[in-house]
Amino acid sequence: KTIFILNGPNLNLLGKREPEIYGHETLADVESRCAAIAGPRGVAVSLRQSNHEGEIIDWIHEAREAAAGIVINPAAFTHTSVAILDALNAYDGPVIEVHISNVHKREAFRHHSFVSARAEGVIAGLGIEGYEAATRRILTLIGA
Ligand code: DQA
Image (cartoon, rainbow, N blue to C red; front, side, top):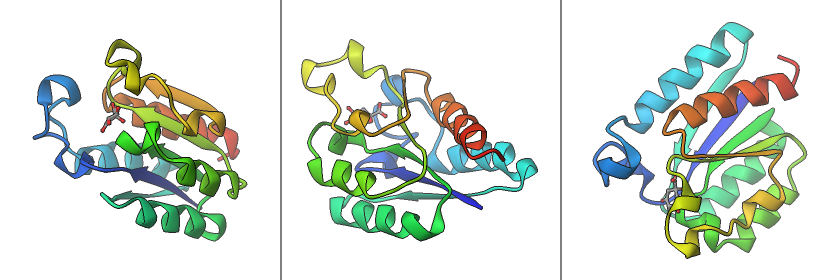
């Protein structure tokens, strides 16, 4: 079994981008932390990042066959993308939405998420520990 950990635009710069908001750790650190949680339970993680909405949608379609659950940080697409919501609505497994920062403490345009309407759970403001919590929750939900 595999959990997809999908990341939206600008998160390739995690660790370098606005570190006062997003911290100094990178997506590679996220992947190794989550793999260390899922691995002992017999589950792999596949962490991916794209700056392109359509590529993220293609990965969600791939997940229909290939992923037991999805952790997703859609980044700015959170607040704009009906298309990512629709793709997730065509996926049957559990979905947990993660935001590194506390979006509710920030600008009003970050307060609404299209993806939250589909997610089993939403985590914001725990830094990259949010991905670890989300991975643990997916493991529980899939009985791993
Ligand atoms: C983010 C919050 C979004 O509002 C922002 O556009 C991001 C990252 C977060 O992880 O805190 O790029 O999803």
